[in-house]
Amino acid sequence: MKIGVLTGGGDCPGLNAALRGVVYRAHTHGHQTIGFLDGWKGVRDGLSRPLTLAEMVGVTGTGGTILGSSRTNPFQKPEDVVKVEASLISAGVDALVAIGGDDTLSAALALHHRGGKVVGVPKTMDNDVNGTDWTFGFDSAASVAMEAAERLRDTARSHHRAIVLEVMGRHAGWVALATGLASGADFTLLPEEPYDETRLFAHVQRAVEARGYALIVTSEGIEVDAEKPSAGARDEFGHELLRERGVGAFLAKRIEVGTGVEARSAQIGHIQRGGPPTLFDRLLSLRLGAQAVDLVLEGRFGQVAVLRGEQVTGIPLEEALKSPKIVNSSWLDLLHTFDA
Ligand code: F6P
Image (cartoon, rainbow, N blue to C red; front, side, top):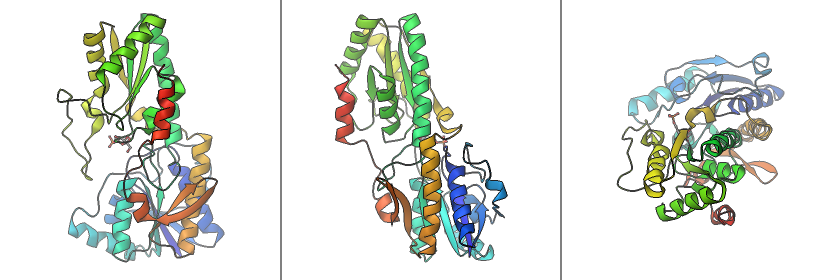
């Protein structure tokens, strides 16, 4: 068998470890692997290369993706769909493993509906894919954001300021939640909760009175109010480029005006997406990459490899894609336990 693999959408730590899982598991069963370059773009444009075991040595701990990535949507134009199918045939691919978030996986599902032999591996620093306990990339990204928050705490303390850290995560608040909890932030704003400026100001004032500074973490995806800037720009899948709205800077200004406390903001941005994966993400990536090949070998096309408790298994792509996984009430309860 020749198994094709691609990495699509926003990169995150763990992609190379997932590729290693795919290549080694395929090799163990006597199958070849080829990698398509830059996500669905490489499939559409017929850009691929063989992946060898030799190339997979030492990639487990590396960031980014050795195959490159893009946010190309191959189902945007009918002529591209034809190109994708022709390219898979001409590359002699028997099955395709698509490693990506909801956009990449929704293209995989569309291909499956057209009879394509495809399975998925969920990845995203946003941790917003349904049906899997965690996605790889999240632990690494949130760990970097946690460290950033702790560095900001130092400087906020020195200057008796309020500092707002804006983290990524799109419309799910997992990264902000983890960062806020792990760094002991005074207030954490998530897209899952309505913006409450009175509470924000009260927390800032209380923290400044108690300790002389305040640390605030916000998700890029919060909805503020009509005054909030809008990015306007969208990617090929129609998503607004949220970081361009600059909600962190907006909040810092509101805090200064509303509380009189000097405020600054920092947007960590793509720093969260680079660097080596954490131990957790390395193990999860290796397991899901290998599991994807098992799904192919079992003929379970249209499925996606997921983590359920201690086990890796497969579920239908439809289930993973039915709606983004957002922060649930038990996590919100934990977050608010530390409001006092
Ligand atoms: O989906 C991952 C993510 O990092 C989001 O958290 C963020 O909104 C988006 O990608 C940024 O995308 P880009 O790399 O295209 O700017």
